[in-house]
Image (spheres, rainbow, N blue to C red):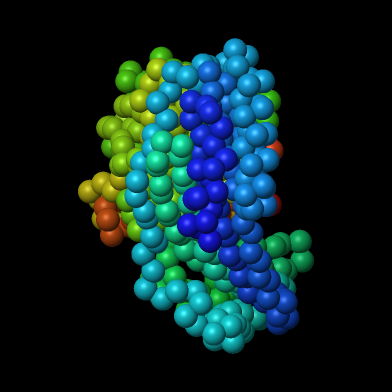
Length: 477
C-alpha cells in the first residue's frame, strides 16, 4: 500500500514551493477490569493522511482518509487553495523557511510485541492484578488495564524526502480507592505515569506484577494516616511527581509557539520571554534539563519530528541557565532562535505544532540515602493526584497521593493529602539535591492537551528524585 501511496503522491503534487504528505496508521487494543467485571475489549484502527503546501509565503493543509488517487488529488488541491488564501496574511512569511526533505527510518525497540501474546494471556495479566486489589472491605473500587498501541508513519516531500517511523507503546494502569466514612484515599501506578515505548517486556521492567496488592495496602495505610502538616519545609519529590513538575513548570513554559502568543486564548501564555534565553537563571546550578529523543523506552523517542527535522539531544537548561526553547522549524524562524525537533501532531487529521517530547531532568550525584539524609525537616511526596497552574505557567499548586515525613535525615510517619505550592520562576532555584541514576526513572504521560482543535499527545519524561528547600507545604481533607 505504501508504494502505491508514494506513486499517487508524486502524481498529485501541485506546482508549489514545497509539498509534503504525512500518513499516520494507528492500531489500538485496550483491556480493562473494573472491580471484578471485565469490560469488553476495545480494538480500533485509524488511518489517513495530511497534505501540507507551502507556496509564495502562504501555508495550507488538508487531511483525508480517502487514500485513493482522487482522494489525494482533492486534498492536495484544498491545501493549495488555503496556501493561496494565506499568502501575505500570515504572521510569518513561510517562503523564508528551508523545509527539509530527509531520508530515514525509526523503529521502536520491542522485545515482546503486543500481538505476540494471545488475548486470553493478556487478559490473565490484568485479572491477576485485579484479584490482588480487594484485600479489605474498605477497598471500594479498583481498576486494572493494559493498552497496546502501534503507530506507523510515512512522511514524503515534493523534493524526494522519505521517512518511515514505527512506534509501539504500552500503557499499564492500576488504580485502587479505599474509603472510610468521608475519608477516601487513592493509589495509582505512578500516577498513571508508567506509559512507555516498547512491548510487553516493559511490564517486567516497571514491576507490574504484584503492584495491585502493594497499592491496595498503601491506600489502606493512608486511610489511618494523619494529614500532612502545614509549613515551610524541604520537599523530596519522587520521579513520578517530578514528571508533573517538569511537565507543567518547565515543559509548557518553554514551548516556543506559546511564548510567541499562539496559545494565549486557549491553553495560556508563558512567563518566559524571548530575551531570557541565554541569560535567565531558571534554577539552581544543579538543574540540567534536556530534550532527549534517544532513550528507546521513553514515549517520545524518534529520529525525526513531523516536519522532517532531525531529532538530537539538546540541553534546554544547563546548570540552571535557560538555553534553548521547545520550538520546531517554523517557530525557530519566527523567533530567530535555535530550537529542537518537536513539531508534532497527535494524528493524521491535525497539523504539527510545538509540543513537548522527551523532556528530562538529568541525573545528579546523590544516592537515595543522601537525599533523605540531607533533610532536617521535610516530607517525601509520590504520585501526583491534583494540579493547578496559572495561565502563564508560573504560580502552581500540586497535590500527591502519598506523603512521608522526614525528620533529622530519616523517613518517619506516613501522611495523607500532601500538597505544595510555589512559583516556577523561583521554585527551581530552591533545588538543592538531585538524585543519581539509581533514583532515576523513565516515565511519561499519554494525554498532554494543547492546540485548537485540541491535540492530546504522548510525552516522555525521565527524572531522578530531587530535593527542594523551603517549600510551602500544606495538608488537605
